[in-house]
Image (cartoon, rainbow, N blue to C red; front, top):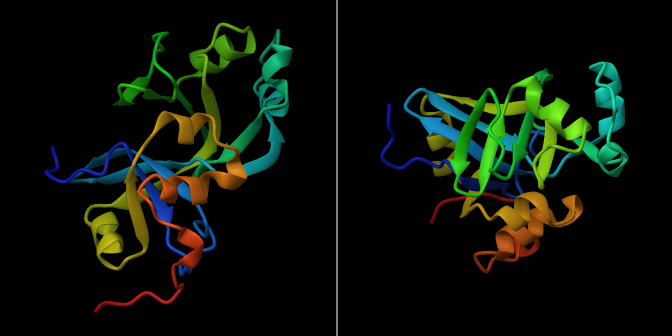
Length: 187
């Protein structure tokens, strides 16, 4: 079902007062948002694991050396055993959904196999787990000033260094996030 004010293709920037350690200082790309809830991928939490380690666990052969050292991200606290690949469009994969004209989310193994052999998307990030919200939960969190929402830009998703994504995402709408008080409130 469609949602009139869908946050799909928005970056959710955790406000400085975020109490949940799973989301403190995170930037989350909302990939799906409808009346049943929302799904997002945290795009600035690299794990200790690199792609070569993930590919080894998945028994993927013929690893392309140019991507072997790319970090795997912690995409969120839900289903951390499941892999998600955000990437630019171009190649068609088995289980992809369009987030925007610039970003696809693929859940199927074929994108990993393509990446390993150098035939994958030009720009991508691999995450384990996702952020999920039940019906109405994300809207309630937005009203409670838990998140700042900004339009997603592919360069923030794929090109900005992970450590800078929280501040750069806020700067896309002219906000210096480090100057916002961690104490939320309503006037």
